[in-house]
Length: 324
Image 1 (cartoon, rainbow, N blue to C red):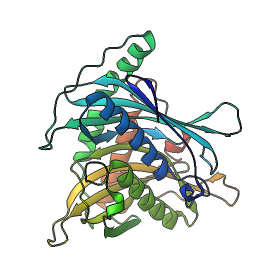
Image 2: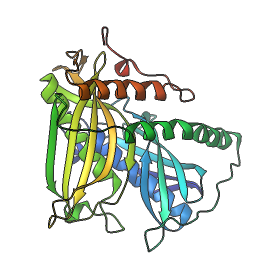
Image 3: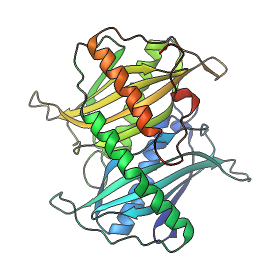
Image 4: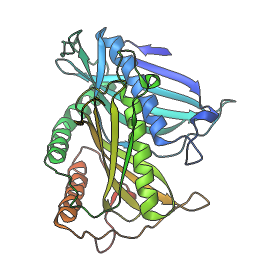
């Protein structure tokens, strides 16, 4: 780990063969796990307190990270609230024998500093010292309203058995190997589970190999504990020109009870690929039930909200297909 500044941390390591997943390269879930670890290091270094993941903003997976690549994950604090830290993360990779690293993805992660009782504690204010830092701070502030609108829209939705779209549920126990430094399952592991469930759902729908190209609105509601029963439900809600929009809910609870509480929610976009790894069109999903139509409209609303973010241009795979 390298501290590139008092508000920035960079992790450097080689992508291992064990990091390669179903896509033939490093899966999005593993990249998100790296992002969470780097952002956690930056947050703890700044606050000098234990920190928890609160939110992960739009992350686009541009190009794959391959086994053997030299990976750099830079996490930089760009804005602070009373107890929150907004952290810009950039994942780059390249040939370890030399040459410039290529940016693979970037996103905004929000961590909250908490005390021994689990309640938020104040953090020192970040004050930009360069024009670039001021620009990054202003960019983070400008996205707060967009993020709040996304969270509000997501919270307003209800998912029941009335939906007819492709749906997959994974169930398992949270293992001790999933634990973070605070004794809870860390956000990166949860995001890896989300990627796995979205992959199964999208692949079943399309009948093809799929890969994540976008994740957004990853909201962490409560901690997930070791030994909890975990349920990860992924449901198709919308199709674009090539993308399948998958809503994923993570729920958990004590196995001695029947109650599962919502832990995390997000929307992931997957694309189908042929044998050569080229993205290909997928059949347009047509809503059938009232719930289908409501969730279809909800996914479109999220697209429109994200389109209002400063400097945000929606990639082709996120746009609606003809006739949708």
